[in-house]
Image 1 (cartoon, one colour):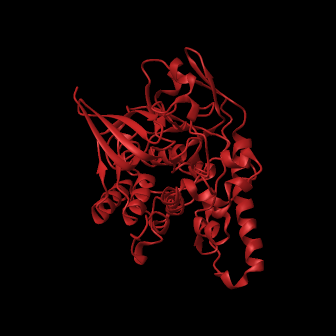
Image 2 (tube, helix red, strand yellow; image 1 turned 90 degrees about the vertical axis):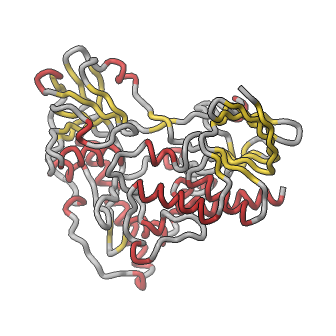
Image 3 (cartoon, helix red, strand yellow; image 1 turned 45 degrees about the horizontal axis):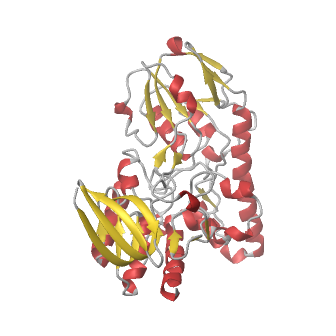
Length: 419
């Protein structure tokens, strides 16, 4: 392997939305920098989303600095391919210095700078930078439960990150494990394609897609909830709460719930508990999970109603009749199934919608917490001139969303300029 040394003021690791927004503000400030991308621009959107995937936030929330989408489509939802095309167009428009297929192997702190060891097509590069911004994402490594190791070899196993479409699966029935956004959306797609689907549910909140004439995300923005500061949140549980069940599929998206899935033929089971050679076992908590999701939706709507009492000028006077959002008071959607014979049920495939982990192995262990993620305060890491961006709750509730990136990127670039 050959080695080459290059010097920059700032190096950004990762060319997703967080890395691109940071690059934009550095470019605007005339700061010499480089963006190192392990694969391609927006790679997690390219490789870890299924074919029909659409963003879960409306277009007005899915834009980067100084490149908004047209007002005519601001309330619609981009497909993953459209979003990737948007990211590439963003790079071209602002001539951002992105280098693809440059995998960072190691980051070392020197006395007054950083040395980054990267690999590109068999060549090793040593890059020196005065500042480094970690933008490689905190949800890019498929996470499998230990139960996956016990699944018989004749059953096809996929993670939500590698599922693409129903034609990818063998004939027979499918078990989807995980009741978050991905699990519910994939279960819905499979059921609508004619497949028999079992969904092992989870304790996940849900929200109506639209309420009182606006998308639910717009209400959270108007009410200032998305601007909640991380430092003001007293409960760790609030920070760790999963994103609510919802879908961007359709012109204006749609509500997705355990009861709406039941209506299209999905069997709503309790959480996946275990397996032996012949049987799958499920917890007796399907009703509890339905109730938790329904209560979350109700709480969100009550919060909006209370807000409108104080701000009547924002009342749209619109009342939607959304069947998918009707609470399942009698738990008619919950299956009584606690055990499934693998052979008799003809389950031939499992999709693990069990979330994502991360890999920061290129960072020194002193920079990571017990779970292996970067230690930081508002994106400022515990080593001088080292920053991170693009993580949920980095500075605010909205930090993990595309539209929260702009503010965080501007904040960190200002820190770099003033350092």
